[in-house]
Amino acid sequence: MWQDVSSYSQGDKKRIPNCFQLRFGILRASLVWCHRDFPDTWLISVYGIFQQRDMHISKYDPDLAKRKALLIIKKTLGEALAEIDSEVANSSSNKQMEPQG
Image 1 (spheres, rainbow, N blue to C red):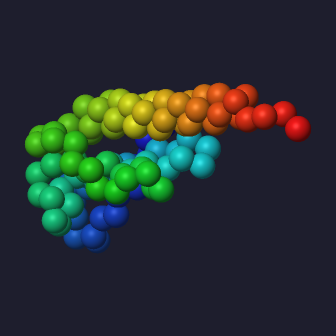
Image 2 (cartoon, rainbow, N blue to C red):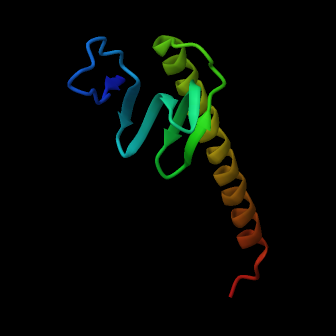
């Protein structure tokens, strides 16, 4: 479940959420709207995997950003798991080819 972790100034009367965080076990992701270096776009970060990736959503739509963020996370983790599976398969086939002593 995404949580609003926005910080607001005392004089901010609108209180528009601009930062959300999601946790799955040790995995932590954040979404930020209008970062000072990236105005008018959503950024996603998955700690330990990638930082501040532009999601190319140029309108304030938190629900759209959250859905797209989940797809980006799923794709990134799927690619990483495919690489791990390939490495495991390669190391298993190499081990079978080694002479038994």
